[in-house]
Amino acid sequence: MLGQVGNFSAIGVRVALYLLLGMFVGMTVREFVRAWTAARLHDPTPRLWGRLSPHPKAWFDPFGSGLVPGLIAVLWAAGVPWSPAAYGKPAPVDPSYLRNVKRDVTLVSLAGPASTLALAFLAGIVIRVAGDPIVLADGAIRRSELDLAVSVFAYACAGLTVFHLLPIPGLDGARVVALLLPPQAAQVYRNADKYLSLFVLVLLFLFGSVILGAMTDAVCSLAVGRTCGV
Figure 1 (cartoon, rainbow, N blue to C red):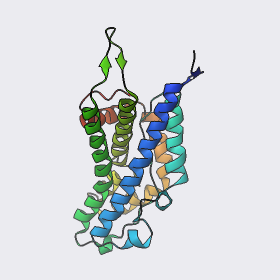
Figure 2: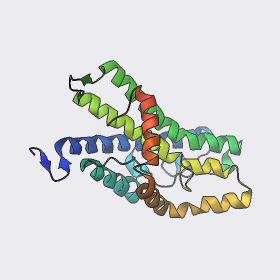
Figure 3: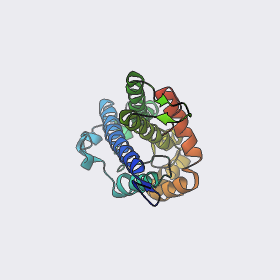
Figure 4: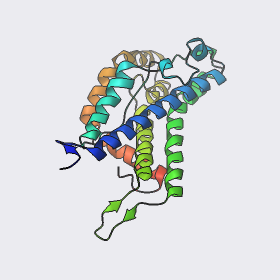
């Protein structure tokens, strides 16, 4: 077939590039917003560590920000959609500077997912303004390149939102869960973040195409106002 080599097609490669762009923008925004929120809550650590910057070098992690999203993009290019996932270098937050530890840790932890969710809804507004895809007489859907690109962008941001809310040590969801545990158990739980890369690989390859995909579809569909078929 013209424009296709094995399982890789021209549209698959374009979708993969849009997905990478979405994850990159989403990660840039979430890491900056998270650091900004901590700083606003009187923690100087993000500023001292150089995290109050949108520049990728402030948060880029070779495995979590490079290899993981790269592998997912290759799967998409080959026609195998996988739930988007990416993470950056551990974000420095010192609870001793926070005035209300439980409240402020929760706010800092939710700032990242809230920012990527907001990006997904902004993409949804663009899709609504641009108009719906055209449904042909045979039931096929003809989409503009803008609709495709923005839909994939919304899906990438929705995927990052779902991923970072998971209760995996090292992710935002785990920091909230740790607040509900007894002090000793919470410390053990938080210290397990050194195994984040292993947790992510197991999670993605066991559940990335089913459970996480369904959750991402639901969030993306809510954001764009229609089935998020990308």
